[in-house]
Image 1 (cartoon, rainbow, N blue to C red):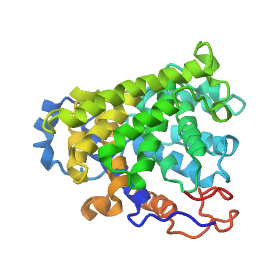
Image 2: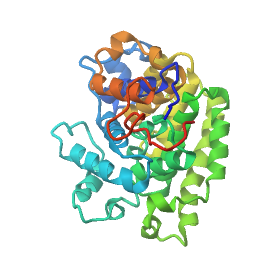
Image 3: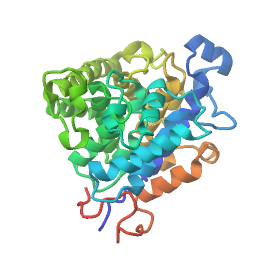
Length: 360
């Protein structure tokens, strides 16, 4: 099958931007802005650390990317579920899993090791932490997915660890934002389009992808369950729309849209930093990293948005040349930008591109 090739190499730009933001924000995580400035100097001059190490944000993004790459197409819940589970367990057991991982991810992945346990039993139904959507960008980059596949996969990868409806909705919305930007949606109209998407999907529960997850939460039905998540997202998008018009780039962005420890705030604050500097991705990353909240998760999402919009050439070669996991990030980016040959077992389709699904 044919794939959509984006000349700006949006997939590569997204993955590199995500990792660069992660590495830039990682040293600042858990610090307030005065402490960050005291340690690193003026925020507009922040340099990438040496070595440029990433956190669990990029590690888990790569886990999602590998699962998508190896899942046999056409993409479906049963085809993605096994590789996703295997990748999350491998991350949990890795000696490299020492980069301040989140408690929800650790608890859920520990339970996912039990082969006979339904993944819904491992999901932390009360958690809407940003671990749900810091890693979702690869879902937005695989070419050829339908809207249903993209939304379902975005929510499924979140639900494996974070079962709160807001974690699901925010992950879906984050993937949709990356998807729109990679396809040329003007940033000035992006928040409005995200609000429309949230309204359109407010009571849509993806039964095929989520199964009976909703029954763990005590809601009257699946529509009521998922609506709670979309309502949280609509509320934060309202704050974001106002902040994008009024906030000075010189203030801590967390004061406007939240500290990013929870999924909807990570989306909004990461997007705010991008929207403050849509044509200056490095400055956007620096602003995101110098923030009082979950600096690495905020900055990794800012980098994903900026990279999707501007492409691979947005990032300085002096930075991309030394980012941790560079080779794998570039390989996945090239795959989804349509630059590599077909994978064994899927004639004419790159790995991670579901055969039999129309491009678009």
